Image 1 (cartoon, rainbow over the protein chains, first blue to last red):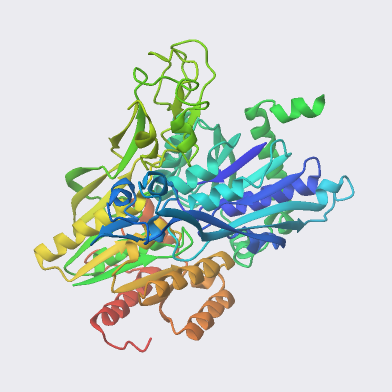
Image 2: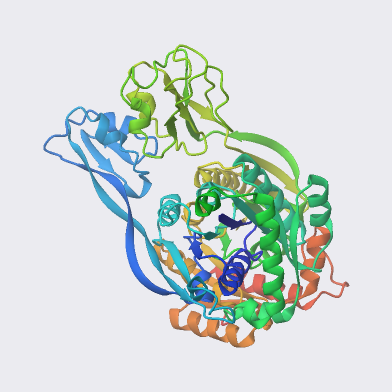
Length: 306
Length: 329
């Protein structure tokens, strides 16, 4: 089962929920857990999970290379490019690789065959393991480690979605439980993270900013047709409008995490809340049961049962 | 005229609350909300929208089923699907015409290809490159303009404001940011204003890069958490990459004073000035719930909370910085 954790607004507690949900499930030991940090602009989960990274692979996009000896200066490539990544000037084609989306149109339609493509690095995908030997570790081997994948877009690179997709592609089908930490917002990098998940947890806070951005995120997950529910973080701070909105829209509130300076202090130092506050682990496993019930039987379970 | 951009790397550090207060404190300015995915500044400044504009920067492929001959007739798996690098075109194996092909798909199975082998274009995955439309030998695929958001020119009690709303699951947030900034600049020039104050998006990607080009100063709002510090470092590197001068504000600094000291040490070692430290103050949340900036307007007699006072000092430092003075802070 693939569960993404998202929010319209940044800083509401996505990473906290994703990390601690992954830990509480791994410690319980009934499922294997993969953790994907898809917030490739600002990946933070590693600060809490301390993974041992084993592999690092570049993520590249194919960008045009002009063979000037063949270029006739016809300008078709510049006309083809929807992203203004090629300019035709004075009988020459000039490329702007940082604008290129890698669609391949220029190379395909160049009548002189003067354009080839070369990989341009835009980020990396790293994989590794999080050791989490805990109370239930002896139960199964799965409890001892979370498989960890994160992406990082190179600084100065505008194109996050291909890096997000590269992280998502690290998970094969039917892999137990996959938890995805998404970037904030509602645009293309978020869509690339959330799309295709079996359930999406939207984390918000009970403030007007939290509410406004939650409504945008709800529009997004509805557009993507992903079942979802809400976690209200820092409950007690702010007002009751988020709760009223969820009730009115018939959106399940899966969990309310109270505002507590002790949680804030643990988070600030990169602490794992479920270790510092075991009762939170119980709450998160309760949340998990609600999600499982809402998502219904999964294809991979049917397969496992055979 | 000087342009100040407020960013953070990490979301939720307090950018918008601080920009809302700057709206009160700064004279002769236009405000720009460049967090076009999840804009919130309007919730503090209650703008009256004077003009709404459609944002059309993207195109999307659409299929004319009457012209499409279907996979098998054109190529084994349909040329459009073969050339698309974004996985936006799939060929269905549907056998009956008129079958709904799922959410958001732009083609229903009617027309000459009668459903079998008909390509379906997924508008969410389509990046608008237009390669499929050029490659289709039957002229069945074409590119259409998409309204991918709206942008607004508004009045607030504190001056003009330009803001936007990107459509759900849309692309091109960077171009919408550019549009908002262009309009803000034109208002500032037209009215002879002193400042453009821009609330930036979180992250370091496309909309942040579009927010940053050519600004006079970037204020990085961080918080004393491992994530806040980590993300601030990447955002400072981004600003350096684009040659933009950066100063830092540590928000909620007293939630972890040791963590705040580490951030200050990092900033000192990088030659980045810490222009302000704002304490945690429930007044900030209370003001947000009331929908007003925490720094109250014309409130010389009102007793302000400690966060509001710290934001006043922060703005004074920024004003000096923008004027090119040494603040010594």
